[in-house]
Length: 92
Image (cartoon, rainbow, N blue to C red; front, side, top):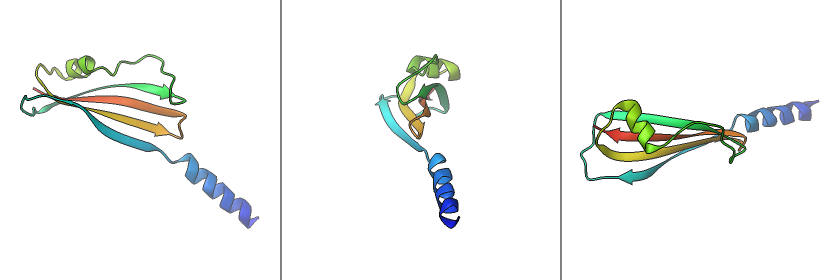
C-alpha cells in the first residue's frame, strides 16, 4: 500500500512537470522601446499546430510597434503533449 502511494505521488509529480525556454531570435540597431507585443499558437504532441499566428509581424501589430528593437521566442511544453510557442516583439 505504501509503494502504491509513492508511485501515485511520482506520477502526479511527473504529470505536473513542464519545460519553458526563452530564446533571442533577432535584434536591430534601434533603441529599446517601451512597447511589447505578443503573439502565440498552441502545439500538440510537439509538432502539430492548429491555427494561431506567432509571427513577428502579428506580435508587432498587436502592440502597435513600428520600429522593432529585438525579438524573443518562448517555447513551453508539458510532457511533450501540449505546449505553446510565443513570439515577443519589443520596440516603439
